[in-house]
Amino acid sequence: MRRFDTCEMKILTVVGARPNFAKAAPIIAAITAHNEGLLVESTDRSEHRVETIRHILVHTGQHYDEFMSGSFFSDLNLPKPDIHLGIGSGSHAVQTAEIMKKFEQVLLAEKPDVVVLVGDVNSTLACALVASKISFDSIGSRPAIVHVEAGLRSFDRSMPEEINRILTDHVSDVLFVTEESGVHNLRNEGVSLDKIHFVGNTMIDSLLNFKEKAEESTILEKLALLRQMGKNGEAKSVTQYALLTLHRPSNVDRPDVFRNILAGLEELSTDCPVVFPVHPRTRRRITEFGLESRLGATAGEDSECARSSGNCGRGIILIDPLGYLDFLCLMKHATLVVTDSGGIQEETTILGIPCVTVRENTERPVTVESGTNTIAGTKPDTIRDAICRQMSRKRNDSVPKYWDGQAAARIVHFLVHWHNAKLSLRPSFIPPAVSLEDRCTCR
Ligand code: UD1
Image (cartoon, rainbow, N blue to C red):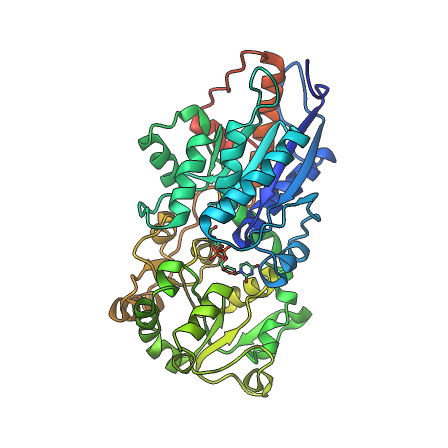
């Protein structure tokens, strides 16, 4: 017996940590557009058609405060979560286990057709494991597991995210890939081509969608980085500054590595202000390792320095973590970005802003191929060298394939088509075999 009538599909999307929000928001918006008949008509001729998608948003609470979570919901127009698991901080094992225990209850109560998981954080893996082993009935029915941002590999298993990526991919049924390297990585790991769908990057959908709105942010003024306002409030002339983010445990949990990175930034911070929104983990380490003096001791956006009429001068300016729109505004106008984040490497690629990644590797090689990103390592010399190379590089950047603002629409089209086929073919449903090129162009 069917759980829902043939005109409805139930999708449950999970978010948990800061990088998840911008990846999930466009998918939820595309689901709403589907329900309002605003997505481009599909040519689907199957017997059954999904008219309505019932959507449930689950927030695990891995990130919980206003800086790391709350402000992203308003900035990205995300709906209030239907279910909040309230997990909070903990070791990897505790966080993963707590999410698993609570998410199992959610799945048993909601019985969705599809679970959408984004990115590579602990919430992603925890929910993938639960969904892969759940059973809704005596014949073992379970939801289809959809992983958005599948196939990325740093080939560095000391990164918790790499473990999360590999395991999530291998228990998922549908793998939506952001760049071609993801397809090759999954094929090399023996994943069947039927599961792999190269659709583009939903985080870039968000960026393109909110790029203009970010101009309304007052962060440049607050940090005294704005020299002259343009018409309609668009920032016209901005003091040259660099933007810095650091939060990877491998960089900030080891005092020697953290000190080396700061040494590599010394020259840059004497040339221009370096704005540093500080992740909570990093904030704690700065205090623990006594690094305040190395950071020039400039404080926050309400500091004397930021309130003064001129610019902030030089040095590294520590501020609280920023919401999505404020950070996007700062990124858009920066002369250079230095980061150890994955997502920021991608965002700077689309914005055409030079990016220096203080890591030994990247799981997003397309950002390096595009020209905007240089992998600098974590030694002072290699960081200085990478900064010089990025700053003096001739701009001839290319845009990665399908990073065009349509990834979420492709995903929702695919899921509707997939579910229609499933309803028609039950009980022996086989996912439709579509060539890679066909999948890329489904709109
Ligand atoms: C997590 C993700 C990482 C992602 C990053 C973005 C994993 C394994 N890692 O790392 O991939 O790039 O988020 O931020 O899932 N904290 C707060 N307030 C919050 C959330 C966290 O103060 O709202 C503090 C916690 O006390 C915790 C520390 O920040 O000790 C780290 O948080 P956690 O979720 O464990 O991992 P992240 O380092 O943020």
